[in-house]
Amino acid sequence: MSGVAKDRDAAMKIAYVIYPDFTALDLVGPYEVISRWPETEVHFLAGSLDPVGCDRGLTVIPTDTPETFPDPDLIVVPGSENPLPVLEDHVLLDWLRAAAPNCQWTASVCTGAGLYAAAGLLEGKKTASTAMTANQPQEPSRNRCPACESRNGPKSRLTA
Figure 1 (spheres, helix red, strand yellow):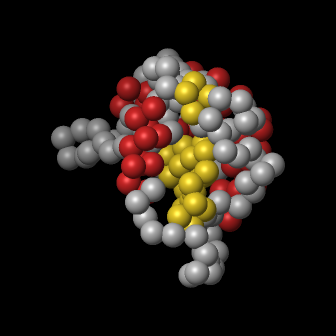
Figure 2 (cartoon, one colour):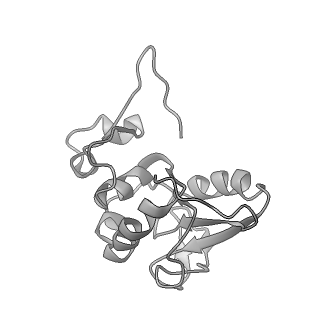
């Protein structure tokens, strides 16, 4: 987001935000790629250090909480088939509001963009989300993430 200067000798600190019912692939996919970058510190951040279950049973043990990891260089937020409960997680929302503006990069997969929107970080910006959530105006997730819209059509592509 902002152009924060980084010490070239320091490891890039990466925060993977985890919360109940996140989609495992949305976490593991980016992790498999980003963890191969040289000079990285990988952190799994949750509202507490209690184990967090994903939507299909995988359990991840957090390494950090917002109190122990205030200054990541990259934040990755996975999506979920059940994205609404986390939008009420004030611990994670407050942390995103504080940490994201100082990051070099912020990223999300699929409905993970809704967490950035709920934190007020997407106001005035357009963000793509899945057609499944963005094209259903009757869905509460659509109302909670007005910045998220589908870009599918004959000349557009949807990426995660």
